[in-house]
Length: 94
Image 1: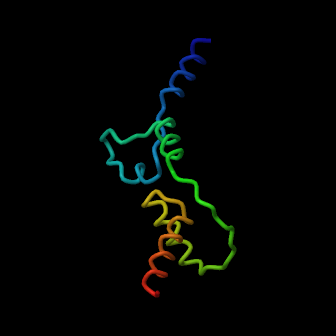
Image 2: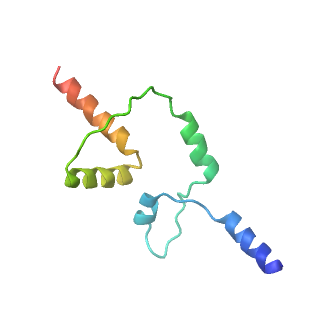
Image 3: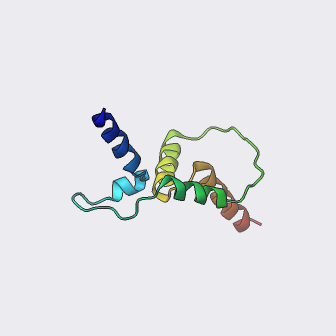
């Protein structure tokens, strides 16, 4: 029974890291920029609610793959990257 409790205790002490942090972590060094679930949830709550419209369109597979990689690197959702790019494009072409 104590082994089960030990495992539960270890699980509770585990911290969540983002994929970018995992990729950037240097082997052999402890990462001090680990975020807890509470910190992540607080950040999400602070984001402003924006009305959105669901759209569907086709992208070249190479563009989609690069978009996914950039979203991972910048720790943003793909739709946010697309919105930012469209905003820049529309401002330039007014």
